[in-house]
Length: 187
Image (cartoon, rainbow, N blue to C red; front, side, top):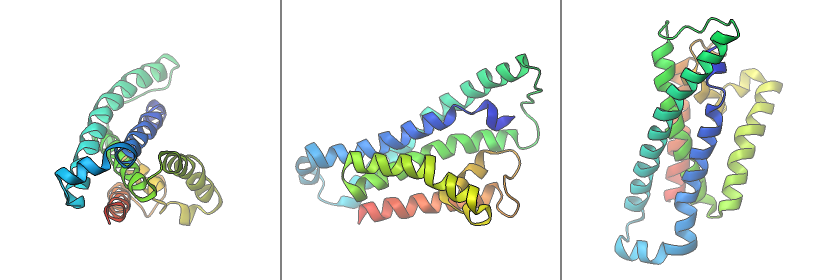
Protein backbone atom coordinates (compact mmCIF):
# COMPACT_ATOMS: atom_id res chain seq x y z
CA UNK A 1 0.00 0.00 0.00
CA UNK A 2 2.99 2.29 0.52
CA UNK A 3 3.80 2.40 -3.19
CA UNK A 4 0.12 2.85 -4.00
CA UNK A 5 -0.04 5.88 -1.69
CA UNK A 6 2.95 7.32 -3.55
CA UNK A 7 1.63 6.56 -7.04
CA UNK A 8 1.84 10.21 -8.06
CA UNK A 9 5.50 10.50 -7.05
CA UNK A 10 6.62 9.17 -10.43
CA UNK A 11 5.34 12.40 -12.00
CA UNK A 12 7.45 14.48 -9.59
CA UNK A 13 10.46 12.29 -10.27
CA UNK A 14 10.04 12.64 -14.04
CA UNK A 15 9.74 16.40 -13.56
CA UNK A 16 12.98 16.52 -11.56
CA UNK A 17 14.72 14.54 -14.32
CA UNK A 18 13.47 16.99 -16.93
CA UNK A 19 14.67 19.90 -14.78
CA UNK A 20 18.09 18.20 -14.64
CA UNK A 21 18.12 17.93 -18.44
CA UNK A 22 17.11 21.57 -18.84
CA UNK A 23 19.68 22.74 -16.30
CA UNK A 24 22.53 21.76 -18.60
CA UNK A 25 21.02 21.79 -22.09
CA UNK A 26 19.89 25.40 -21.77
CA UNK A 27 23.49 26.22 -20.87
CA UNK A 28 24.62 24.68 -24.15
CA UNK A 29 21.98 26.61 -26.06
CA UNK A 30 22.40 30.09 -24.60
CA UNK A 31 25.13 30.83 -22.05
CA UNK A 32 27.94 28.33 -22.53
CA UNK A 33 30.59 30.86 -23.55
CA UNK A 34 30.07 33.25 -20.59
CA UNK A 35 29.89 30.34 -18.14
CA UNK A 36 33.15 28.81 -19.26
CA UNK A 37 34.78 32.24 -19.51
CA UNK A 38 33.95 32.79 -15.85
CA UNK A 39 34.89 29.22 -14.86
CA UNK A 40 36.93 27.36 -17.50
CA UNK A 41 37.08 24.12 -15.49
CA UNK A 42 34.17 22.02 -16.71
CA UNK A 43 34.28 19.77 -13.63
CA UNK A 44 33.49 22.70 -11.33
CA UNK A 45 30.58 23.81 -13.50
CA UNK A 46 29.14 20.28 -13.54
CA UNK A 47 29.72 19.90 -9.79
CA UNK A 48 27.81 23.13 -9.15
CA UNK A 49 24.98 21.97 -11.38
CA UNK A 50 24.95 18.54 -9.69
CA UNK A 51 24.70 20.20 -6.27
CA UNK A 52 21.92 22.46 -7.53
CA UNK A 53 19.82 19.64 -9.00
CA UNK A 54 20.41 17.51 -5.91
CA UNK A 55 19.07 20.28 -3.67
CA UNK A 56 16.12 20.85 -6.02
CA UNK A 57 15.38 17.10 -6.14
CA UNK A 58 15.61 16.71 -2.37
CA UNK A 59 13.35 19.72 -1.88
CA UNK A 60 10.73 18.49 -4.34
CA UNK A 61 10.95 15.00 -2.84
CA UNK A 62 10.67 16.36 0.71
CA UNK A 63 7.45 18.10 -0.29
CA UNK A 64 5.97 15.47 -2.64
CA UNK A 65 6.59 12.35 -0.53
CA UNK A 66 4.89 13.46 2.72
CA UNK A 67 2.11 15.12 0.73
CA UNK A 68 1.60 11.95 -1.32
CA UNK A 69 1.61 9.77 1.80
CA UNK A 70 -0.88 12.06 3.52
CA UNK A 71 -3.27 12.29 0.59
CA UNK A 72 -2.74 8.75 -0.71
CA UNK A 73 -2.94 7.27 2.80
CA UNK A 74 -6.17 9.17 3.46
CA UNK A 75 -7.69 7.94 0.20
CA UNK A 76 -6.69 4.36 0.98
CA UNK A 77 -8.15 4.61 4.49
CA UNK A 78 -11.37 6.08 3.05
CA UNK A 79 -11.65 3.01 0.80
CA UNK A 80 -11.11 0.64 3.74
CA UNK A 81 -7.50 -0.26 2.96
CA UNK A 82 -5.48 -0.18 6.17
CA UNK A 83 -2.58 2.21 5.60
CA UNK A 84 -0.02 1.95 8.38
CA UNK A 85 2.44 4.77 8.69
CA UNK A 86 5.43 4.18 10.91
CA UNK A 87 5.54 0.39 10.52
CA UNK A 88 8.69 -1.62 9.82
CA UNK A 89 10.59 -0.12 6.91
CA UNK A 90 8.24 2.84 6.58
CA UNK A 91 10.77 5.56 7.42
CA UNK A 92 13.54 3.97 5.37
CA UNK A 93 11.24 3.78 2.35
CA UNK A 94 10.03 7.35 2.93
CA UNK A 95 13.57 8.73 3.05
CA UNK A 96 14.50 6.48 0.14
CA UNK A 97 11.70 7.98 -1.97
CA UNK A 98 13.06 11.47 -1.30
CA UNK A 99 16.62 10.42 -2.16
CA UNK A 100 15.53 8.68 -5.36
CA UNK A 101 13.85 11.90 -6.50
CA UNK A 102 17.19 13.71 -6.28
CA UNK A 103 18.97 10.90 -8.13
CA UNK A 104 16.46 11.19 -10.98
CA UNK A 105 17.59 14.81 -11.35
CA UNK A 106 21.25 13.80 -11.48
CA UNK A 107 20.52 11.28 -14.23
CA UNK A 108 18.67 13.98 -16.18
CA UNK A 109 21.65 16.31 -15.75
CA UNK A 110 24.05 13.65 -17.01
CA UNK A 111 21.88 12.74 -20.01
CA UNK A 112 21.53 16.41 -20.91
CA UNK A 113 25.29 16.87 -20.75
CA UNK A 114 25.91 13.81 -22.92
CA UNK A 115 23.28 14.52 -25.57
CA UNK A 116 23.27 18.36 -25.40
CA UNK A 117 19.82 18.44 -26.97
CA UNK A 118 16.84 18.99 -24.67
CA UNK A 119 14.45 17.13 -26.97
CA UNK A 120 16.73 14.12 -27.38
CA UNK A 121 17.66 13.91 -23.69
CA UNK A 122 14.09 14.29 -22.43
CA UNK A 123 12.79 11.77 -24.97
CA UNK A 124 15.46 9.21 -24.07
CA UNK A 125 14.91 9.81 -20.36
CA UNK A 126 11.13 9.42 -20.46
CA UNK A 127 11.12 6.48 -22.90
CA UNK A 128 13.78 4.64 -20.88
CA UNK A 129 12.06 5.18 -17.52
CA UNK A 130 8.48 4.70 -18.60
CA UNK A 131 8.84 2.08 -21.32
CA UNK A 132 12.14 0.25 -21.82
CA UNK A 133 12.82 -0.79 -18.24
CA UNK A 134 9.20 -1.82 -17.72
CA UNK A 135 9.30 -4.06 -20.78
CA UNK A 136 12.64 -5.60 -19.81
CA UNK A 137 11.38 -6.21 -16.27
CA UNK A 138 8.12 -7.75 -17.53
CA UNK A 139 9.86 -10.04 -20.03
CA UNK A 140 12.94 -11.02 -18.01
CA UNK A 141 12.41 -10.10 -14.34
CA UNK A 142 15.67 -11.71 -13.17
CA UNK A 143 17.60 -9.34 -15.46
CA UNK A 144 15.16 -6.43 -15.33
CA UNK A 145 15.50 -6.06 -11.56
CA UNK A 146 19.07 -4.83 -12.14
CA UNK A 147 18.03 -2.11 -14.59
CA UNK A 148 18.91 1.22 -12.93
CA UNK A 149 15.45 2.67 -12.30
CA UNK A 150 13.99 -0.71 -11.32
CA UNK A 151 16.87 -1.22 -8.89
CA UNK A 152 16.40 2.28 -7.49
CA UNK A 153 12.73 1.63 -6.86
CA UNK A 154 13.81 -0.94 -4.26
CA UNK A 155 14.98 1.94 -2.08
CA UNK A 156 11.46 3.35 -1.85
CA UNK A 157 9.65 0.09 -1.17
CA UNK A 158 8.97 -1.31 2.26
CA UNK A 159 9.47 -4.92 1.18
CA UNK A 160 11.87 -6.06 -1.56
CA UNK A 161 10.19 -6.21 -4.94
CA UNK A 162 12.44 -9.06 -6.08
CA UNK A 163 14.35 -11.36 -3.76
CA UNK A 164 18.09 -10.96 -3.96
CA UNK A 165 18.21 -7.21 -4.53
CA UNK A 166 17.26 -5.29 -1.40
CA UNK A 167 16.85 -1.61 -0.73
CA UNK A 168 20.51 -0.96 0.03
CA UNK A 169 21.91 -2.62 -3.08
CA UNK A 170 19.16 -1.25 -5.28
CA UNK A 171 19.95 2.26 -4.06
CA UNK A 172 23.69 1.70 -4.51
CA UNK A 173 23.18 0.44 -8.07
CA UNK A 174 20.95 3.41 -8.91
CA UNK A 175 23.40 5.93 -7.40
CA UNK A 176 26.31 4.27 -9.24
CA UNK A 177 24.40 4.55 -12.52
CA UNK A 178 23.75 8.24 -11.83
CA UNK A 179 27.43 8.78 -11.03
CA UNK A 180 28.50 7.13 -14.31
CA UNK A 181 26.02 9.18 -16.35
CA UNK A 182 27.08 12.48 -14.72
CA UNK A 183 30.79 11.60 -15.06
CA UNK A 184 30.26 10.75 -18.72
CA UNK A 185 28.49 14.06 -19.24
CA UNK A 186 31.32 15.89 -17.50
CA UNK A 187 33.94 14.31 -19.75
